[in-house]
Amino acid sequence: MDSEAKSRAKNSNAARRQFIADTARLACGVGLLGLGVGLYSRHATALPPAAIRPPGALPEAEFSGACIRCGMCVRDCPYNILHLAKPEEPMSTGTPYFVARQAPCEMCEDIPCVKACPTGALDHKLIDINKAKMGVAVLVDHETCLSYLGLRCEICYRVCPVIDKAITIDIQTNARTGRHTLFIPVVHSEHCTGCGKCEKACPTQIAAIKVFPIHMAKGQLSGHYRLGWVEKEQAGGSLVAPDVEHQYNLPEGMKYEVGKGLSKLPPADAAPAGPGTSPGLPKAFQGGKL
Amino acid sequence: MSPAPVRPGAEAIAEKGWFLAHKWLLLRRFNQVGILALFLVGPWYGLWIVKGNLSFSYTLNILPLADPYVLLQSLVTGHAPEKLALIGVTIVVAFYLLVGGRTYCSWVCPVNLVTDLANWLRTRLGLKGGAHVSRQTRYWILGMTFVAAAVSGTIAWEMVNPVTMMHRGLTFGIGLGWAVLLAVFLLDLFVMRHGWCGRLCPVGAFYSLIGKFSVLRVRLPARAACNDCMDCFAVCPEQQVIRPALKAIGGAPPLILEANCTNCGRCIDVCSKDVFSFATRFGGSETALPSGKQVGNRV
Image (cartoon, rainbow over all chains, first blue to last red; front, side, top):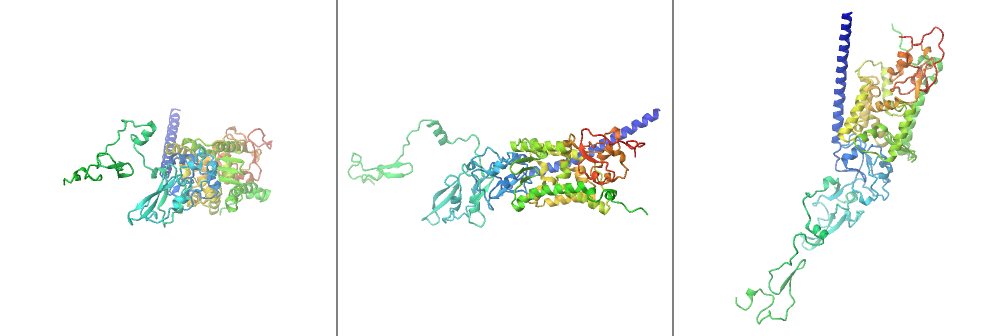
């Protein structure tokens, strides 16, 4: 009787050991698989710069958790610009994107792609397409930009849906010829929606202006920086000490105005103009002493 | 010389005729292909009945349907969906609570076409054996996908999920996704029988949890008539679900209550004695036993 109980205990012990071994094997195998899948998916959140998310997309780290890869945005885009990432593409499989150089966002006023999103991965709070932040256009290559070369191009400026806000033209002297003007497109990130129309329209072989994800395109000042002129305007006056009018040590008879430079003072009839003096000359040259 | 192997269902075909012995299989294929067709007439012919894919779809701009598994993973990453997805997921969960969670696997999931083909070929080629992997593995993988989602903050399993990859591939362009499907096909063909759907797939595992409480079941009102031909075991993709109900193990009722029964109905087809039928989990009684025969004759 005793030996039977013992062997039964031995059996159950062996069964327990087997169970633990099997469980451990399973857990390790599945754990390894999970590690692989997890790392793979983390790597995929490094979106390639040419892939632009649709309007209203949450920041990439949140987006890849919020987007369920259903493609409703793709279907409701009236211009068919959106694709779902294929497994071999270096981003989260099945998530939507567009490539500006192929087909830019047409910035529909009713934003159908956002409305179609069932999870809010495209944020439903975005109701004004001009507030979209799909990316930021950057005039990346000054060496091939036709405007920088002195040509009258400015196509990016003309096609910009937020013209004169997102892209303005900065007029500069063409130092190379000395007699012409450069019409330089300047992007203002505050107004740029990242639609990519400028990149699409750029006439060079490879676009000189490109849309990049905001985190790649934008710098940021350290938190302790204060812009004096902004602070002054907000405060309605200087914050440090009352402004004292600057005293210029100027040649006699001359005046200086900010933005205009030196100019002659209007001839005064009063005393300073003594005999034999000409008002434009410094004192040292006056009086025939030299 | 051993007798030539008789294909499972031969007896049923002889008894009921080919059509009745394939009734549920045909209905199931019709359903699988029909659902795919509904999704495909939009992108192929511009006839928009259903938009989206199996993760979320919108039928005739009225009926939202959302996959509870992918949505739960999204929730685990810390994102709450919009109302439409919540409505969609409620409808889907309610539906599968009625018809059985894994009914999704055999009646809707496109990968079932791939793995059924692999299994058919495996039987035809007489391939036997292979790696042994526990049928519990899928629950471990299911758990892992939630942990991966929580830790990585992304719906990690969607990177490799063959189920959504196939359906999305068909509706939106597959890319190299076919390689993943080929891998699933080869796994089921050469490495293990019913490997993907029966042992590994976390989607099926998830739906089986819904199926624990589902109403529609396979009932065995005539289990006493079983002649132990084993055809149902041969065709069942989740063989372990049949035995308790068929053999009244532990006094089990004549009802397949196992969550992993996919309600494919193949057992109903191939049984020449009409032991099986679809029914609800409630009520119903066993047909009277022929005298002298005992319920649950042990094998």
